[in-house]
Length: 343
Image (tube, rainbow, N blue to C red; front, side, top):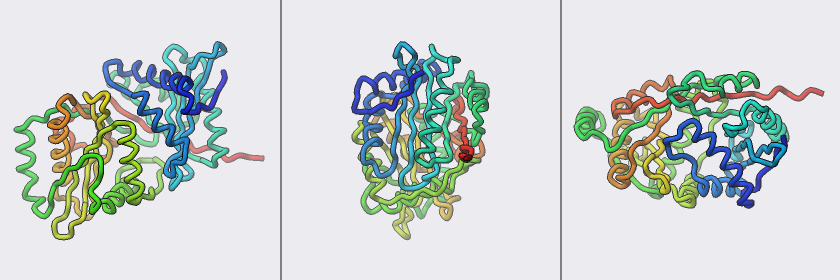
């Protein structure tokens, strides 16, 4: 087995790496839109350049005939969590049980030690038919990984039922009289940028993390703008709804959604958070309603949005289920802390 680092500037090598990840993805969920080549390549190009936030390493595994049969992506935070490596690993469905994953894992550990990373974590997609029993669980256990958190995927069909939405808004309105719900596309308004950065930083400390070894992230307005620029560069639309506290003018809650323009039939939910001192005002429900309504109106071809919640995040699960969310599999997070090197 030959393991090579892939330079994203090499279009052919990158396309071979991408084909492995896409084949593995289609094997699990053949009827869904998934990864897009141009998105992945632009993101990795930035991560292999002068990106001040995340460095990316891409590995391809080749069989003796030179065919790409495995792939991995290592995301290495550069501003915080310098102990951490976030990993995506895939083996082509036709090449499984041949030691490809183990070979990649050995090289991943070598690269982590070189970069002084001690903790690696990776999420696994489990469709409903495999929930709790995907082969990746046995693979992780065999390599000494532990289950750090169990997440559940839910999908919300669009457009929302207007009667359901009207009833929810009516129930929530008395609790949120001191708040204004605002939406925007792509670029956060300048006057809310500092608050937006604080809220994203709180996502690393205030949401359930299980056993995930994540330390507080460092965010400022410049980092938020870099994320927005990346989204624009890969042609991914973003939609945000936020709650502004009228007495102070501060942004105290938001929800984020991403829409790949190349496959807009499925949208992706990312962050939803309410500052702890402003909870109890139904702001999580109200910002999600506002965003989902705008999503359905602006992208009528979007049929559903996928969201992931930790099993213990009962409050956000209640919000999503009130909006009609249905379970569509799980996403366990596995983690491994490297053994210290001994002389």
